Length: 174
Image (cartoon, rainbow, N blue to C red):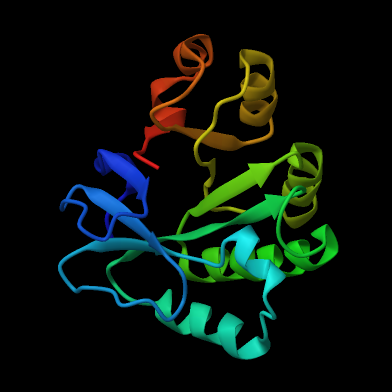
């Protein structure tokens, strides 16, 4: 399995992305054998009825050799199911990440304190990477201190990017 740091783009939703990108898909989406993927249930999709069958499909499809990360998953206080339900689904992603030894790609909106609390509670061994980070250096510092890594897309705070150590930051196109 490839390490995420070897990719130029660790998070995109473009199915036509090049060989140096990790394409984010949800369970049940078609995956090509010649591409790299992350698989997860986006917090916005949790507004739909996510049953045990979808969670089991996530676990099965995450085992593929060309799936190098779990997610995009996470918590969004503005959209999706109530946060209690989002947390249940997120914890399943964490369990899959830990079982398979694959890092977690996280979407988080207005729920960083809850996400930090979950990390403390669950004590994961795998990397937790906040994707599309646009926050200020102070929030980045807090997240880094709690063991998170950060990924930066096209729009980001340049002071924050500069403050994150190279080994703890990733690039993406989403």
